[in-house]
Image: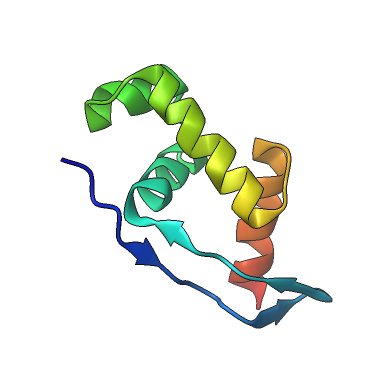
Length: 84
């Protein structure tokens, strides 16, 4: 069973002139961490015991909630957050 609790990180923090608000679920954070560690969608699906399509849905939710359109933008957000 998936955990649907929301995790709020960095809410209201200013980073490089942009306000970054997140309300990612625990599962979205888990998928995001695996993405950033270099795992493919298939690898993430296998590790989390979910389908590759479910991984894609989580990625779309992450991107939407963060106001980004690509994995490279996600890397940029993480780097900015680490600098601040």
